[in-house]
Image (tube, rainbow, N blue to C red; front, side):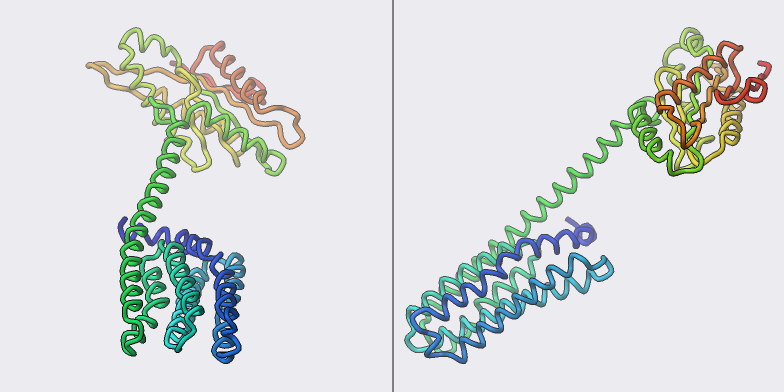
Length: 382
């Protein structure tokens, strides 16, 4: 995955890191207490045990508080939250690693050393798994836990075989971290790809394959959404249904391929007239198209429909040396307002009835269902 792509997922990665490492904030103090109170170690090294227990408990408590507070901070503090998280993890590892190194230098204390070694190996391996999403953090945590003990044991010549074993274990953890990090990012990339493909499929399921307009299913969904807003808006939704006049003649005279091209051209014309972001143009079926418009007066909707009808009448499609042309019949229905008991299906039915009236009265005309015939229909010659 490219660096710029990784930056897009930074917030997701930090969230994963916090979730994966949250359990450790409870186990650190518990394991520290187990080591401190084993074999009366606390009585022989009281100052060390107090420093170890208090410092580790405080940093874990601060991490828990930050984890809780970061959920309520806005995204503008994302960078600061990330820095605090990374620094707190580093301090946790350094506290444990320093105390582990100190304990390994003590004479005797074989039982406590063995217990501390087992706990350190487990926390180091578990922490690396938790921090795999960020390779640098995981490697730093690994060295913070083990490097102090390895260095001091090597310098003091104390139990060199164990120091070498720690070193080999640390190197092995780095290799495993690198592999796990690659697998994590590959999984994340695949997840994002699946989301993207799902979104593309969703869009494709809403699109009419021939015209590129929305299909009837998506139109119904959008109308349902707008219908639910009817009681909260001043201008309820308006539905416009358009039907290509004499479309069968185009198919019969010029072939179905010409008919398909004419449907595409009509769809393009619709989108040039109803071009607001809130306008929804869909193929209703066959040679019928439907438009959903909001935040507009019925008069303005009628004017737009007339513009569409006039442009359609003027439109010519060259085809095999001839020009193919025809007209549109249009029916419009506006919702009757906030207190109306009308259903959205009834709104479509009124628009369809107005379209039928336009067809019946000679085609190439616009009729609004909610207006009188004298004021709502426009006749043209041709």
